[in-house]
Image (cartoon, protein in one colour):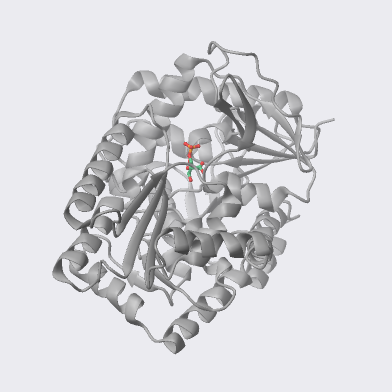
Length: 486
Ligand code: F6P
């Protein structure tokens, strides 16, 4: 039977990995699944989403696993045409670049928006028919922003929460979207709308005030009624997402992961300093600018190529979208040039892996790395930064972190940088490399406290308790108790 809590996200938490005519179901890539999978592992829920494979794609029929942990999984079938127009088109060629400060050109296409509407409608119909009476429906991310309003019209009995995992752009950028009012009205169908940071929330409120008749004050939005709908109040807030601290901390103490961390260093030739980058291969992650800074440091002799290695792990992502094909060519071209310029026979200070690493193995790489480079041009939160901190159980290591990642708002004791400022980035890398043990321990212990205070269990509990609060006073009390920014 469908659970009282329904999680609705574009992707199911599992996806099929093909290999040699067969394959297995593995955890889906990305921060949303990493966070939610941990947050919900102890709660009964029904997770509704797409399997990552078009339903009319040729190949063996695939049985989706019925459950993951305590969650029942329900597939929303999407055709190849819909995947191309909704997921690759409106979601990842329009909304994704626009919401990330338009760091790549934004495609405006009426036909992909129409598919976006149709796919949101498909999700809505499935949720509306599955949700038990008075259920709690938690909708996730930019792929489903029309769903809250659609669902409210069909099922006024359910509580609807929406959480945006990526940034919400400033009004001057959001205002370019020809479908801006549809999106805002879609979101305003929710009872609670959550953002990663206070900045994202502020941007959203500015657009609501400018483009709709609704008015916002003190963490609530009053939505006036119209002929068909009663006036309503929507709660909004910033709920910075986090990670499963205990799980990563426990992994970091196992012999298996510790040995793997030792193996990583020895396979890389036991460098004195290992610098690490771990990202989905995405133009928002700032991989090229990071590489440029590192190459300059090697060329100038500030980093010694005989005792330093920079390893970039990039996981394949959205490979059918043109901008992603281009960024891969650019990153790999730059890596190739750097390897050519800096290598010695049989060894190179620049190492690159293009693959999806199992999440447990990643903890070993974090443990092996002396300096972690998380330098996105724009990022909703960035869980790699938090995972690195969680894996440094000895209060060592150093984090160089972009001030344009949501995590930069919380992890103030990282070496914070502006990724566009190559000289500033180089200075921060050198400071992190050369910092004393005491300095590193001071910073890491403070970073660890910040992450421990807000782990992902707490994030989901706070969101769901505010969503299910009986009245505004209870919401105010809960927010105050949790110290959540308005
Ligand atoms: O963080 C935004 C997001 O779309 C998440 O939903 C997901 O974790 C990640 O990016 C990867 O995206 P995709 O589902 O497109 O592979």
